[in-house]
Image 1 (tube, rainbow, N blue to C red):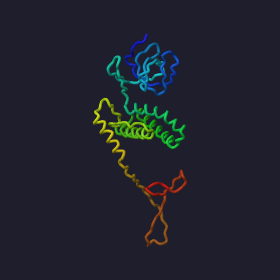
Image 2: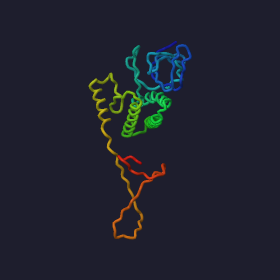
Image 3: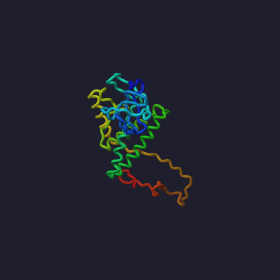
Length: 242
């Protein structure tokens, strides 16, 4: 007999389920699900990406996660208690995965490789956050890097930009239209602000010098060498390397 769940409300799919049983719900690895009922090793619920379609799926295919429930009952709302940046990161990477494959099909090699590097960077940053041993300042710095990369990828793929407050997505239902407009205006203004050129300091220590005319002024000329490209590094127009 199906009984409503009390604590098993939210989870992540850890193995794809093809929904080959009657009333089965098709699920892919990484999907997030809301669980409504349970019965003998099965759950009944829906994927958050498509809440209108409900079905059943094996409970051992789901990794349960902590969540709080609002308005318990028929119209209850389940909200994950994990960090909102982690939640956004997981769902965004899943969406990017499909679009990333299409870039390869369309022979957009440059964006394909750049997005691949960004996705790996985000996964590495995600692992650092999940470890849970970061200081407050380091955590804030990592979240800044994560959201910057998420926004870059969304822009490159033509997806909607996400309004943020303290690196977390804002809920349009809990913020006024005026405040939402201010957040987006601030983002566009920040985006249009030119990035100042970075400067570097190089310390050179000269241990010995041989010269026949010590009474004259000397000029010491040196160059930087790129061992990977096997050539000296020179500065071209507008600071690019040539």
